[in-house]
Structure formats: C-alpha cells, structure tokens
Image (tube, rainbow, N blue to C red; front, side, top):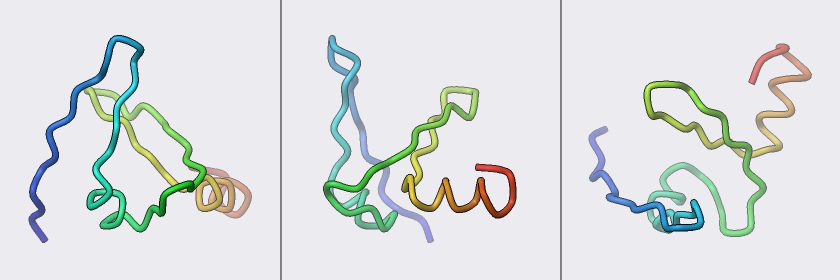
Length: 62
C-alpha cells in the first residue's frame, strides 16, 4: 500500500511532531511509550516499547 509521505521539520531543540494520521496508520496511539532506534542512512525506526521489549525477550532482537 502506497501512503502519502509526511513532510516534517526538526526544530532548534531537536524535536519534531508526527501527524496523528501517520501514527494511526502505524497503530500507535497518543500517549504510547516508544523506542527509537537509528537504522542508519538517515532512518529512525519507532516501535511501541512493549512490542520491542517482547521481541527482545523472546527473540533476542529489537
């Protein structure tokens, strides 16, 4: 499925806001705890912390 990209800008404090529609498509609700991991080449992966911890315990990887 091809989705519309969201253009974002990092502010002077290194912060950004993700559009609610983008979060919804990813199954992330407002207030969710997330884990951010750099995937190299300018990519950052956000995962629900609960899912990432479960994968780490069960499979030994994030």
